[in-house]
Length: 90
Image (cartoon, rainbow, N blue to C red):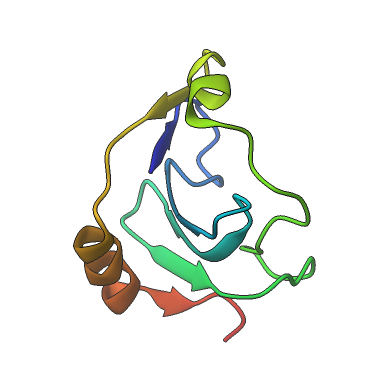
């Protein structure tokens, strides 16, 4: 999970990501300031939330960027957020 530190009211503030062994996203949830949770399990550039086309950098590399704060997230916590979220393509 990553907290995205920014002031844009239209962008997500929390990014929940499930990754495979190659660090490719398999599922993702974006949480917005208004509490909205949008999820996806596919690459779909036209949707508000889409999986990345490339593997993600390491947690250390992400944490080096001042706009991101890497936070711990268990599989059970991810499943709980996934279950509360709405499909991005609906």
